[in-house]
Length: 138
Image 1: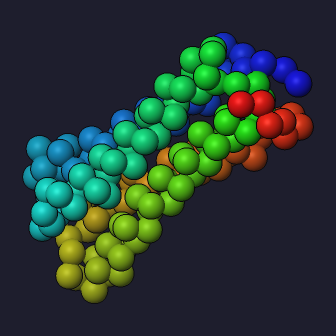
Image 2 (image 1 turned 135 degrees about the horizontal axis):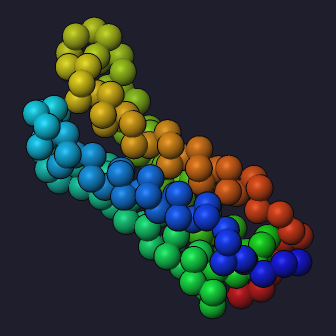
């Protein structure tokens, strides 16, 4: 079992994608692509899951809390990233049929949909490639 290397850039990539997820609603508004939803809904669908992923990435990057590859705490933190990405994706999936039907404009739908799938894929990639035997090191 190898310790988490300082050269592992995957948490940095995931953190960047999570930051994008947090920023999307406000960037969309700034460039004139807002969705007609309450701000609290944007917070629940973007900010909360994005911040959870950012916290997990910070812990993964820290030598004391990052754990060794395959450790249960490390896999749990990555798993939280997968679930947060799935949440962002699932809460925005209805935008695609709405845009097809003309109920939502394409620009806002696409920019909001751009956040969840990359977070999900990056976190899932980390989870699947985190080599090493599963160890219950807490």
